[in-house]
Image 1 (spheres, rainbow, N blue to C red):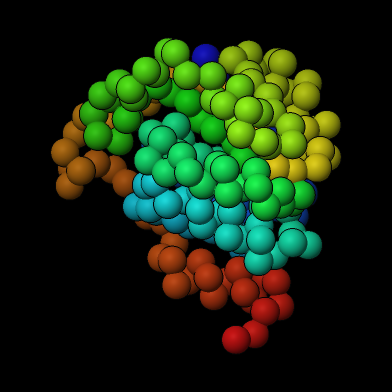
Image 2: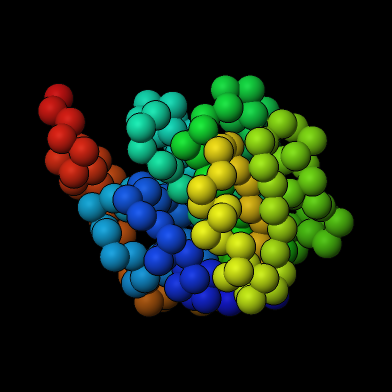
Length: 195
């Protein structure tokens, strides 16, 4: 398994000008790595809906590369969106799945069938243009550049270390995310969109 910090560190130099959004406990670490926060879309507390939101961005902004770092617990809450993504074939969509096999935010309960699901195989069977799976950082680092140039939708599952949070939510040291209205305003300004 790979540490999520290392996934983000290896990915970041290949980001280019992609718009990036994240989900799950691991996704909260992305702001510490990102070099272009104006192109980061905060979806905090949208478990089960982040995939749909990122898919909407890919459809609405076809000239922008959209990258989602999803979590398996969140994605399993809304699996139907994968069929919609495959059906619409957004060429600009790169869908990473950070699979830690547990619900890390709520105390580490195992995700159902956590060792038996082949997420990349599932994405391939449902119709994603390209799929990959990694459980080795060096392998991921070797292939990320070519993956980022593939035509989407692209799906990449990565086995990551679980970083379980057991403290009550009110007692956790939380890194504050930008509020959603601020995120939208800053992204519109970055893209030159007036409304």
